[in-house]
Length: 178
Image (cartoon, rainbow, N blue to C red; front, side):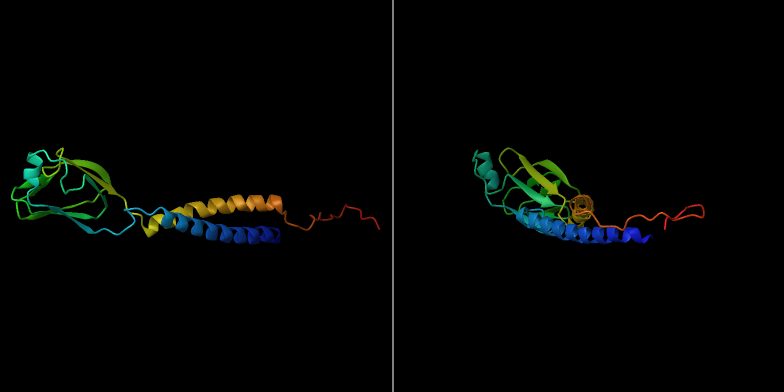
């Protein structure tokens, strides 16, 4: 590699390190400021159907102790425990009175299951992709080189490199003034 490129490589290395640190700090700051329910490892989430739920729904009560919808991440397991005296259904789950049933979520999706223990008979579930270290590193890998190139070009415009003037080799037929 010609020595003429060394100042450019040194500057690019410095600019790349600056961009990497800046993007890393910025990405992590934004991650911590914008964290939500998907920024956790998969877990088992229990949903309890209280005793008397079927009776309250049959009487037309609007307030039932079950949330209207829930958010999960891929890998979560929904464990539904039926403490009611009536059998209930949640989508593919049939939950006999006094028993439990579970459902594992393996793909990101937004679903509405038919449900016998909520007002309106539909239960909305959001399954999200979790935010992982690999997705955060991917964001860093995509942003740092782009910022580095931008900063490198601007640095060359703002503070040009001082390079030695180009020398023209003298041939046999060239005359040199003395």
